[in-house]
Length: 320
Image 1 (cartoon, rainbow, N blue to C red):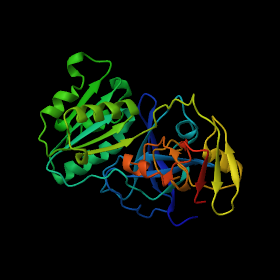
Image 2 (image 1 turned 90 degrees about the horizontal axis):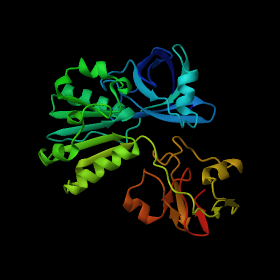
Image 3 (image 1 turned 90 degrees about the vertical axis):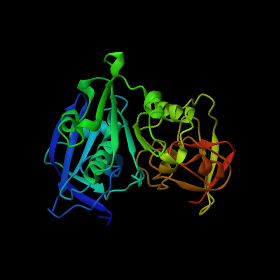
């Protein structure tokens, strides 16, 4: 097994809300797990060739366990369905060591915004900030109380008074008025938000309308938004190492074409969110459809995500 992979056992699986289960993972050999910081995630090998990323939501000072929360997605491509149907207490899993692309930074004050299952990294942040005695507020938006994961844990936590729940199904007065919330914040506040695409877009647009400093906005997507693929055309990808060329038809990803040709590219989320499959582009202009690269990085056109991005030029020469 690779040095950065770990064997863990599912110590406990629990239902946290409608269609959401938590999994408490402990080291298979009883040794302490690698330390992690708030905002970290792990890659979970759900099945053969099926790797998915899940955020750690337990207090970051813990080294005896990892806790993840998994939403059963009706549009599952195998990950969440595999976790819910096949992974039970006592099961053994292979995972990666924790990685963090969504870290907390030093700030006078923090605002934590969670949408649905996006609460998982936000919850670890709340635990860390609470342990530090740092000022923060948590606002958690969900469809209904029945679909709100970790509600009892938050209500019984040391930061319960700083946590606020907002439900789509509830009365208008309890729904999150984000514009008013941001307008009342000290401009030194750093804002962390995670959730589905619509939630992320709402926070970004509301912050932009108030000219909120971009350097103080920190976000993580939980899945890519739907992309209009109606105008997609076939193109070629060429490998610099061998000179081999492959046609990528409309409706098929570069990743799928390369896999079918026996070309290995590491991948995880396969939605352009995690950056695992990031590949250098030597010639050509990518059609970026990821949520991982910044706008500046996309504009450089020297790398792209073959799991979801395509090409604006007839050919892409890849550093493979």
